[in-house]
Length: 366
Image (tube, rainbow, N blue to C red; front, side):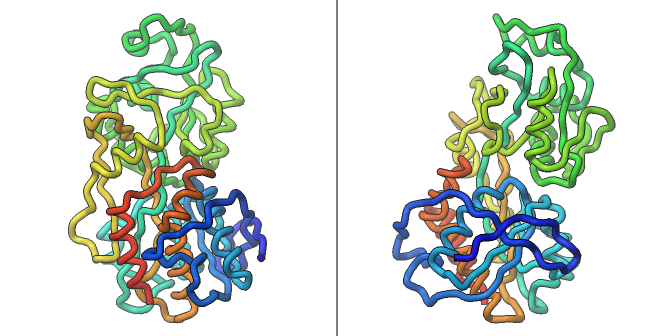
Protein backbone atom coordinates (compact mmCIF):
# COMPACT_ATOMS: atom_id res chain seq x y z
CA UNK A 1 0.00 0.00 0.00
CA UNK A 2 1.33 3.39 -0.95
CA UNK A 3 1.04 5.91 1.89
CA UNK A 4 0.73 9.57 0.95
CA UNK A 5 1.19 12.93 2.62
CA UNK A 6 -0.30 16.42 1.91
CA UNK A 7 1.77 19.04 0.13
CA UNK A 8 1.28 22.33 -1.70
CA UNK A 9 -0.35 22.14 -5.11
CA UNK A 10 1.52 23.90 -7.90
CA UNK A 11 -0.12 24.81 -11.19
CA UNK A 12 0.38 21.33 -12.61
CA UNK A 13 3.14 20.26 -10.25
CA UNK A 14 3.15 16.86 -8.63
CA UNK A 15 1.16 16.59 -5.45
CA UNK A 16 2.76 14.80 -2.51
CA UNK A 17 1.20 11.62 -1.17
CA UNK A 18 -1.81 11.75 1.13
CA UNK A 19 -1.53 10.92 4.83
CA UNK A 20 -3.74 8.04 5.76
CA UNK A 21 -5.82 7.86 8.89
CA UNK A 22 -8.50 5.67 10.41
CA UNK A 23 -10.01 2.37 9.45
CA UNK A 24 -13.46 0.98 8.86
CA UNK A 25 -15.62 -2.08 8.54
CA UNK A 26 -14.99 -4.51 5.69
CA UNK A 27 -18.64 -5.18 4.90
CA UNK A 28 -20.00 -3.65 1.71
CA UNK A 29 -23.51 -4.23 0.29
CA UNK A 30 -23.40 -6.28 -2.90
CA UNK A 31 -25.32 -3.58 -4.81
CA UNK A 32 -22.62 -0.97 -4.15
CA UNK A 33 -19.47 -1.98 -6.09
CA UNK A 34 -16.86 -0.13 -4.05
CA UNK A 35 -13.16 -0.36 -4.78
CA UNK A 36 -12.87 -2.80 -1.86
CA UNK A 37 -15.10 -5.37 -3.57
CA UNK A 38 -14.11 -8.19 -5.90
CA UNK A 39 -14.05 -5.84 -8.91
CA UNK A 40 -10.88 -5.87 -11.06
CA UNK A 41 -7.92 -4.31 -9.28
CA UNK A 42 -7.20 -0.66 -10.06
CA UNK A 43 -3.79 0.77 -10.87
CA UNK A 44 -2.41 4.27 -11.33
CA UNK A 45 -2.40 7.66 -9.66
CA UNK A 46 -5.41 9.86 -8.99
CA UNK A 47 -5.03 13.52 -8.02
CA UNK A 48 -7.62 15.67 -6.32
CA UNK A 49 -7.82 18.96 -4.48
CA UNK A 50 -10.33 20.95 -2.50
CA UNK A 51 -12.26 21.26 0.73
CA UNK A 52 -10.53 20.93 4.07
CA UNK A 53 -13.83 19.76 5.58
CA UNK A 54 -13.59 16.44 3.73
CA UNK A 55 -9.93 15.89 4.61
CA UNK A 56 -10.45 13.20 7.26
CA UNK A 57 -13.18 11.48 5.25
CA UNK A 58 -11.00 11.41 2.13
CA UNK A 59 -8.16 9.94 4.18
CA UNK A 60 -10.55 7.17 5.26
CA UNK A 61 -11.77 6.48 1.72
CA UNK A 62 -8.21 6.57 0.40
CA UNK A 63 -7.12 3.96 2.92
CA UNK A 64 -9.96 1.67 1.88
CA UNK A 65 -9.16 2.02 -1.82
CA UNK A 66 -5.39 1.67 -1.47
CA UNK A 67 -5.66 -1.31 0.88
CA UNK A 68 -7.73 -3.17 -1.72
CA UNK A 69 -5.66 -1.84 -4.65
CA UNK A 70 -1.96 -1.72 -3.68
CA UNK A 71 -0.95 -0.27 -7.06
CA UNK A 72 -3.13 2.83 -6.64
CA UNK A 73 -1.94 6.15 -5.21
CA UNK A 74 -4.54 8.79 -4.37
CA UNK A 75 -3.32 12.32 -3.67
CA UNK A 76 -5.61 14.98 -2.19
CA UNK A 77 -4.49 18.54 -1.50
CA UNK A 78 -6.82 20.25 1.03
CA UNK A 79 -6.38 23.82 -0.16
CA UNK A 80 -10.05 24.81 0.11
CA UNK A 81 -13.17 24.40 -2.00
CA UNK A 82 -12.46 27.34 -4.30
CA UNK A 83 -8.95 26.15 -5.13
CA UNK A 84 -10.22 22.62 -5.68
CA UNK A 85 -12.84 23.73 -8.19
CA UNK A 86 -10.32 25.97 -9.97
CA UNK A 87 -7.77 23.15 -10.17
CA UNK A 88 -10.42 20.76 -11.52
CA UNK A 89 -11.52 23.28 -14.12
CA UNK A 90 -7.94 23.84 -15.26
CA UNK A 91 -7.32 20.11 -15.58
CA UNK A 92 -4.60 20.09 -12.90
CA UNK A 93 -6.53 17.40 -10.96
CA UNK A 94 -8.98 14.70 -11.96
CA UNK A 95 -11.51 15.32 -9.18
CA UNK A 96 -12.37 18.00 -6.67
CA UNK A 97 -13.83 18.15 -3.19
CA UNK A 98 -16.06 21.18 -2.67
CA UNK A 99 -18.43 22.44 0.01
CA UNK A 100 -20.71 23.64 -2.74
CA UNK A 101 -21.61 22.33 -6.16
CA UNK A 102 -20.78 24.31 -9.28
CA UNK A 103 -23.44 26.90 -10.03
CA UNK A 104 -25.50 26.38 -13.16
CA UNK A 105 -24.04 29.47 -14.83
CA UNK A 106 -20.51 28.20 -14.11
CA UNK A 107 -21.39 24.89 -15.73
CA UNK A 108 -22.92 26.62 -18.74
CA UNK A 109 -19.73 28.67 -19.19
CA UNK A 110 -17.81 25.39 -19.55
CA UNK A 111 -14.06 25.09 -19.65
CA UNK A 112 -13.62 21.93 -17.58
CA UNK A 113 -10.12 20.82 -18.47
CA UNK A 114 -10.37 17.50 -16.65
CA UNK A 115 -13.35 16.37 -18.78
CA UNK A 116 -13.88 15.21 -22.34
CA UNK A 117 -15.53 17.79 -24.56
CA UNK A 118 -19.26 18.02 -23.94
CA UNK A 119 -19.15 15.94 -20.76
CA UNK A 120 -21.65 16.53 -17.97
CA UNK A 121 -20.36 16.90 -14.42
CA UNK A 122 -20.76 14.29 -11.73
CA UNK A 123 -21.41 16.04 -8.39
CA UNK A 124 -21.99 13.65 -5.51
CA UNK A 125 -23.04 14.79 -2.01
CA UNK A 126 -20.66 12.38 -0.29
CA UNK A 127 -19.95 14.25 2.96
CA UNK A 128 -22.67 15.76 5.12
CA UNK A 129 -21.52 17.51 8.26
CA UNK A 130 -22.66 20.08 10.78
CA UNK A 131 -20.77 23.35 10.98
CA UNK A 132 -20.07 23.96 14.64
CA UNK A 133 -20.27 27.53 15.92
CA UNK A 134 -17.59 27.43 18.59
CA UNK A 135 -16.34 29.97 21.10
CA UNK A 136 -13.86 30.52 23.91
CA UNK A 137 -15.31 32.39 26.87
CA UNK A 138 -13.99 31.40 30.27
CA UNK A 139 -16.65 29.70 32.39
CA UNK A 140 -19.25 29.39 29.61
CA UNK A 141 -19.75 25.91 28.13
CA UNK A 142 -22.64 26.51 25.75
CA UNK A 143 -24.95 29.28 24.59
CA UNK A 144 -28.36 29.54 22.92
CA UNK A 145 -28.17 32.10 20.11
CA UNK A 146 -31.03 32.93 17.75
CA UNK A 147 -30.25 33.67 14.08
CA UNK A 148 -30.50 37.46 14.37
CA UNK A 149 -28.12 37.51 17.34
CA UNK A 150 -25.63 35.25 15.57
CA UNK A 151 -25.83 37.45 12.49
CA UNK A 152 -25.26 40.56 14.61
CA UNK A 153 -22.18 39.00 16.24
CA UNK A 154 -20.56 38.11 12.92
CA UNK A 155 -21.67 41.37 11.26
CA UNK A 156 -19.95 43.28 14.05
CA UNK A 157 -23.05 45.02 15.44
CA UNK A 158 -23.09 42.97 18.66
CA UNK A 159 -19.67 43.45 20.19
CA UNK A 160 -19.74 42.39 23.85
CA UNK A 161 -20.54 39.07 25.46
CA UNK A 162 -22.93 40.62 28.01
CA UNK A 163 -25.02 42.25 25.29
CA UNK A 164 -28.76 42.13 26.13
CA UNK A 165 -29.49 40.15 22.95
CA UNK A 166 -27.22 37.33 24.15
CA UNK A 167 -28.49 37.51 27.72
CA UNK A 168 -32.12 37.29 26.55
CA UNK A 169 -31.74 33.66 25.43
CA UNK A 170 -29.28 32.55 28.14
CA UNK A 171 -31.02 33.04 31.45
CA UNK A 172 -28.76 32.14 34.37
CA UNK A 173 -25.52 32.19 32.37
CA UNK A 174 -22.85 34.48 33.84
CA UNK A 175 -21.89 36.48 30.74
CA UNK A 176 -18.67 38.49 31.16
CA UNK A 177 -18.07 42.10 30.25
CA UNK A 178 -15.71 40.99 27.48
CA UNK A 179 -15.28 42.05 23.86
CA UNK A 180 -16.40 39.57 21.22
CA UNK A 181 -13.66 38.61 18.77
CA UNK A 182 -15.17 36.91 15.69
CA UNK A 183 -12.83 34.60 13.73
CA UNK A 184 -13.42 33.86 10.04
CA UNK A 185 -11.69 32.06 7.20
CA UNK A 186 -9.09 34.09 5.32
CA UNK A 187 -9.26 31.81 2.26
CA UNK A 188 -12.09 31.28 -0.19
CA UNK A 189 -14.06 28.62 1.59
CA UNK A 190 -17.13 26.50 1.12
CA UNK A 191 -17.52 26.42 4.89
CA UNK A 192 -17.78 30.21 4.82
CA UNK A 193 -20.25 29.93 1.94
CA UNK A 194 -22.47 27.55 3.89
CA UNK A 195 -22.24 29.54 7.12
CA UNK A 196 -23.09 32.84 5.43
CA UNK A 197 -25.88 31.06 3.54
CA UNK A 198 -27.39 30.18 6.92
CA UNK A 199 -27.00 33.76 8.17
CA UNK A 200 -28.49 35.12 4.94
CA UNK A 201 -31.49 32.77 5.07
CA UNK A 202 -32.28 33.21 8.75
CA UNK A 203 -30.68 36.42 10.08
CA UNK A 204 -33.04 38.91 8.46
CA UNK A 205 -31.85 42.50 8.39
CA UNK A 206 -29.01 41.69 10.79
CA UNK A 207 -27.11 40.08 7.87
CA UNK A 208 -27.02 42.01 4.60
CA UNK A 209 -23.94 40.43 3.01
CA UNK A 210 -25.51 37.47 1.23
CA UNK A 211 -24.19 33.96 0.83
CA UNK A 212 -20.51 34.27 -0.07
CA UNK A 213 -17.38 32.11 0.05
CA UNK A 214 -15.01 34.98 0.82
CA UNK A 215 -15.61 36.75 4.14
CA UNK A 216 -17.31 40.05 3.23
CA UNK A 217 -16.61 42.22 6.27
CA UNK A 218 -13.52 44.10 7.39
CA UNK A 219 -12.44 43.46 10.97
CA UNK A 220 -12.34 40.42 13.17
CA UNK A 221 -9.57 37.83 12.95
CA UNK A 222 -8.85 35.91 9.76
CA UNK A 223 -7.31 32.43 9.74
CA UNK A 224 -6.31 29.99 7.01
CA UNK A 225 -8.31 26.78 6.74
CA UNK A 226 -10.46 25.00 9.27
CA UNK A 227 -7.53 24.19 11.54
CA UNK A 228 -6.43 27.82 11.48
CA UNK A 229 -9.85 29.01 12.65
CA UNK A 230 -9.97 26.41 15.43
CA UNK A 231 -6.46 27.28 16.62
CA UNK A 232 -7.25 31.02 16.63
CA UNK A 233 -10.37 30.44 18.73
CA UNK A 234 -8.45 28.28 21.19
CA UNK A 235 -5.62 30.81 21.47
CA UNK A 236 -7.89 33.80 22.06
CA UNK A 237 -10.25 35.06 24.73
CA UNK A 238 -13.79 36.03 23.82
CA UNK A 239 -13.36 34.45 20.39
CA UNK A 240 -16.11 32.88 18.31
CA UNK A 241 -15.99 31.26 14.88
CA UNK A 242 -17.30 28.48 12.66
CA UNK A 243 -15.66 25.20 11.70
CA UNK A 244 -16.50 21.76 10.42
CA UNK A 245 -17.75 19.78 13.40
CA UNK A 246 -15.08 17.11 12.90
CA UNK A 247 -12.42 19.58 14.01
CA UNK A 248 -14.30 21.41 16.76
CA UNK A 249 -12.81 19.23 19.47
CA UNK A 250 -13.70 20.20 23.04
CA UNK A 251 -14.45 23.86 22.30
CA UNK A 252 -17.67 25.31 23.73
CA UNK A 253 -20.44 25.53 21.15
CA UNK A 254 -23.65 27.32 20.24
CA UNK A 255 -27.15 25.84 20.14
CA UNK A 256 -29.14 27.37 17.29
CA UNK A 257 -32.87 28.06 17.22
CA UNK A 258 -34.98 25.69 15.12
CA UNK A 259 -38.65 26.45 15.59
CA UNK A 260 -39.15 26.42 19.35
CA UNK A 261 -36.11 24.20 19.98
CA UNK A 262 -32.46 24.91 20.74
CA UNK A 263 -30.37 22.40 18.79
CA UNK A 264 -26.65 21.69 19.08
CA UNK A 265 -24.43 20.50 16.24
CA UNK A 266 -24.59 16.74 15.60
CA UNK A 267 -24.38 14.30 12.72
CA UNK A 268 -27.97 13.26 13.42
CA UNK A 269 -29.22 16.85 13.16
CA UNK A 270 -27.29 17.35 9.93
CA UNK A 271 -28.81 14.20 8.43
CA UNK A 272 -32.35 15.37 9.29
CA UNK A 273 -31.70 18.69 7.52
CA UNK A 274 -30.18 17.00 4.46
CA UNK A 275 -33.13 14.63 4.08
CA UNK A 276 -35.53 17.59 4.33
CA UNK A 277 -33.73 19.42 1.49
CA UNK A 278 -34.49 18.95 -2.25
CA UNK A 279 -32.13 18.32 -5.16
CA UNK A 280 -31.95 21.40 -7.36
CA UNK A 281 -33.87 21.46 -10.63
CA UNK A 282 -32.32 22.11 -14.02
CA UNK A 283 -29.21 19.95 -13.67
CA UNK A 284 -27.86 16.88 -15.43
CA UNK A 285 -28.93 13.49 -14.09
CA UNK A 286 -25.40 12.98 -12.71
CA UNK A 287 -25.40 16.34 -10.89
CA UNK A 288 -26.96 15.91 -7.44
CA UNK A 289 -26.66 19.43 -6.07
CA UNK A 290 -28.86 19.85 -2.99
CA UNK A 291 -30.63 23.08 -2.02
CA UNK A 292 -30.20 23.08 1.76
CA UNK A 293 -33.34 24.12 3.64
CA UNK A 294 -31.84 26.48 6.23
CA UNK A 295 -35.27 27.38 7.64
CA UNK A 296 -36.48 23.85 8.29
CA UNK A 297 -38.46 23.33 11.50
CA UNK A 298 -38.12 19.52 11.44
CA UNK A 299 -37.68 18.22 15.00
CA UNK A 300 -34.01 17.70 15.79
CA UNK A 301 -32.74 19.32 12.58
CA UNK A 302 -29.50 21.31 12.73
CA UNK A 303 -29.52 23.60 9.67
CA UNK A 304 -26.00 25.03 9.93
CA UNK A 305 -24.56 22.27 7.77
CA UNK A 306 -22.37 21.81 4.79
CA UNK A 307 -22.90 19.24 2.11
CA UNK A 308 -19.54 18.62 0.53
CA UNK A 309 -19.34 17.16 -2.94
CA UNK A 310 -17.00 14.88 -4.81
CA UNK A 311 -16.86 16.37 -8.29
CA UNK A 312 -15.73 14.59 -11.42
CA UNK A 313 -16.58 14.14 -15.08
CA UNK A 314 -19.24 11.92 -16.57
CA UNK A 315 -16.73 11.35 -19.38
CA UNK A 316 -12.94 11.48 -19.27
CA UNK A 317 -10.52 11.46 -22.19
CA UNK A 318 -8.66 8.56 -20.57
CA UNK A 319 -10.45 5.31 -19.63
CA UNK A 320 -7.95 4.49 -16.87
CA UNK A 321 -8.62 7.85 -15.19
CA UNK A 322 -12.35 7.22 -15.42
CA UNK A 323 -11.91 3.82 -13.74
CA UNK A 324 -9.89 5.36 -10.88
CA UNK A 325 -12.42 8.14 -10.28
CA UNK A 326 -15.31 5.69 -10.46
CA UNK A 327 -13.61 3.32 -8.00
CA UNK A 328 -12.85 6.10 -5.53
CA UNK A 329 -16.35 7.60 -5.73
CA UNK A 330 -17.91 4.13 -5.36
CA UNK A 331 -15.98 3.60 -2.14
CA UNK A 332 -16.92 7.05 -0.81
CA UNK A 333 -20.67 6.52 -1.22
CA UNK A 334 -20.71 2.88 -0.14
CA UNK A 335 -22.06 1.98 3.29
CA UNK A 336 -18.51 0.97 4.24
CA UNK A 337 -17.07 4.29 3.13
CA UNK A 338 -19.81 6.35 4.78
CA UNK A 339 -19.39 4.42 8.03
CA UNK A 340 -15.63 5.03 7.94
CA UNK A 341 -16.19 8.77 7.46
CA UNK A 342 -18.77 8.83 10.25
CA UNK A 343 -16.38 7.05 12.61
CA UNK A 344 -13.32 9.14 11.80
CA UNK A 345 -14.84 12.53 10.92
CA UNK A 346 -18.20 12.57 12.70
CA UNK A 347 -20.11 13.10 9.45
CA UNK A 348 -23.68 12.00 8.76
CA UNK A 349 -23.93 8.95 6.48
CA UNK A 350 -26.00 9.57 3.38
CA UNK A 351 -29.44 7.97 3.34
CA UNK A 352 -30.21 4.86 1.29
CA UNK A 353 -32.40 6.93 -1.02
CA UNK A 354 -29.59 9.40 -1.71
CA UNK A 355 -27.08 6.57 -2.14
CA UNK A 356 -29.27 5.05 -4.85
CA UNK A 357 -29.24 8.33 -6.79
CA UNK A 358 -25.50 8.77 -6.22
CA UNK A 359 -24.80 5.23 -7.39
CA UNK A 360 -26.59 5.86 -10.68
CA UNK A 361 -24.46 8.99 -11.21
CA UNK A 362 -21.20 7.18 -10.42
CA UNK A 363 -22.15 4.27 -12.68
CA UNK A 364 -22.40 6.77 -15.56
CA UNK A 365 -18.70 7.71 -15.36
CA UNK A 366 -16.79 6.53 -18.40
